Length: 152
Image (cartoon, rainbow, N blue to C red; front, top):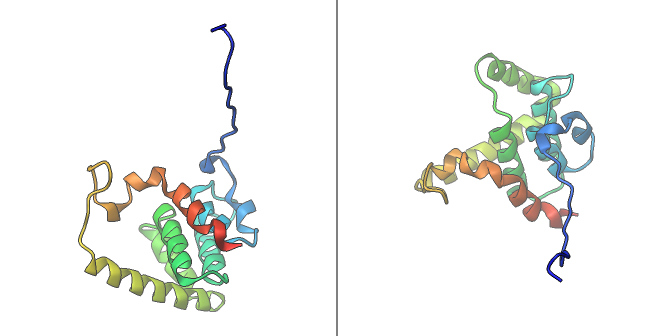
């Protein structure tokens, strides 16, 4: 009687870092483009990946709140530092990136005004400041999926 299984639950798990970003950047879905920031860069490199992700999200038909959330995801998980940051700024300066650059500037200025008016809070674990994003890294993809599922 007690040797049999009452309920058995099986599922497949996929880790975003195990996926190739290039495939998801080609999809016409801003969520896929944003989540590609958590994936393995393609042969074009991190700079092109970030620019293409931002362009897809910023030029999509979704509302400004969702754009801001997805841009924040890209900025958080595909950061540029040092020479990469300089090269990325040069890419943004090119003519074909002009519209994305302008929209990104607007979103960043809105976000910085919100951040300056909001006091720092500690995260659910009490180990960090929420704005640093360190504890949220484990749950951000779930939050994005829940917020963006009603986009289509």
